[in-house]
Every structure is written in C-alpha cells, then in structure tokens.
Image 1 (tube, rainbow, N blue to C red):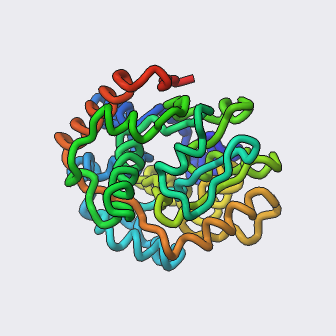
Image 2 (image 1 turned 45 degrees about the vertical axis):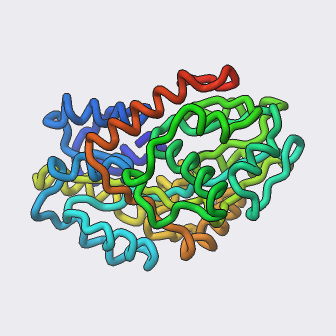
Length: 322
C-alpha cells in the first residue's frame, strides 16, 4: 500500500479516503485480526494465513472474483484449486529463492540445502523470521538427507516435529541472522546468502555484479498475498476492484517487484525487473503454489516450536527485527 500514487489513484477513482495498518509478521496479522477485524473493510494477508481466517473472512457472494478469468493460466489454475470464496482473490505473487554473493560462496541449482549451508562456511546467512518458511527449509534438509528428495506433496502440518538439534545440524557453522528486514545484511563482506522472497531482494541481486538470484527447482515455490473485501458496500467493492485490477497490479509490480497475478511484466522498461520477471515466468510452470491447510492449533505449535528453536539454537544465531 506504500506504492507511490496508488492511494491517490484509488481515492480518486472511488471517492474515498484510505487508511491502513501494517504488520511485521503473520503472527502480528493474526493478533490484529482477532482484536480489530470489525474496524476494517478490506484485508491483505499472506495465503499462509487463509486457512486460519477463512471461516471469518469469507462472504457467500461477491463480484470480486470475476477478474480471476484474466489471470495468467498457471495462476488461475492455482487460484481455482484453492476453492476460495468469491470475495478473496490474489493480490500479488512472489517466489522464494536464494540471493548469494559470489565473493563468498558459489551456489547452483543442483545443491541440496545441507550443501548450501556447508558451502557458506562460517559466513553470514539470513533466514526469514517465519515459522512456516523455517519449517519448509528445515523439512527439506531432513528429507534430502534421508531420501535425496524434497518434501513436496506432504503438508507441513503432517510432518514430524522438528527440534533445536535439527536446526543446528542444518545451519552447521554459519552465522545465521533471523530477520524479515534483511537487505541491510547484503552490504556485509561476509554475507554468503539469504533464503528470501525473490521479489524483495532482486534489486540487490541485479545492482551488484557479485550478487545473484537462484530460483531452485526443489526449494523454490510461489507464495501469494490475498485481498478480501469484508463487506459488499459499494465503496468497499470499488476499492477492492481498484486495488486488484490490472492497472493497479502493474503499479504495485513496478514499485515492489511483487508479480501481478496477470503476469504481465513484458512491457516494463526496468531492466532489473525484467531480468527477475524472466526468471519468475520461466519457473512458474514447474513450481508449486504454497497453500498449506492447518488449524490454529497446528500453527500455534509451529510458532512455539520456531520460537523455541530461535532462542535455544547455538550462539551463531541472532534474531533481529530492525
């Protein structure tokens, strides 16, 4: 929502005044939702959160989903497989990947996750501060170590609980920072790699000749942000449509580099974005869309386990929100 000119565009189109709240993490989103959902007309949230709020957020009727027919075919198929209510649509897309520094490490798409951490030695690694993303990368490591394959096809909630020892075994000798605001680490001379949202980091990967973005065939997946109108008042519907129509989606895409669900970035004049867009579009037919069904109890268990791992992990792990 901090995209330049987006608020002005929507306000003028719908004759409204917009205000919005931001949140640092999915856990904070859930807290805000449970304490203040009646204060909002629309919600934008990670698809990881959908199954936790679907009973409260869905409306039986809404014209918003009519625009789904204009989505890119792969995106439309993923959306339709989610069986979302008609007031919930995709807002933007991103893909997980590794941004890596060739002055410290050399990564390629045949490396498994243990090899990637091993290659980093005792240098700096950044991991997303999110229990689901942490669970995925740790599960990949354990599955690859045991079977030589990834965990695709299994639900996170069905996997065996992980431990601090599992995490320490995965990260090996690396110095790990757990953070969601991670771009400041990219200037550190010992920075090796970050497992991150590719959209958020591609500028760094393209502005330096030493930084590269790896979309990994076994470890990358598509995640989406969702938008839901929480009532069918004309003003609410106008804003919801304005924010998710192709014109606004292109504005968001140009500023944030999160991909529009229409996947229509060919006309961009930004050479850096076009490089990332080409990687994204090439990988899109072969990567899964993350859509994990789990309960509050299961998510709470993931969250508590991740908090325990973060604070009981070895001394090389540091937590930051700055």
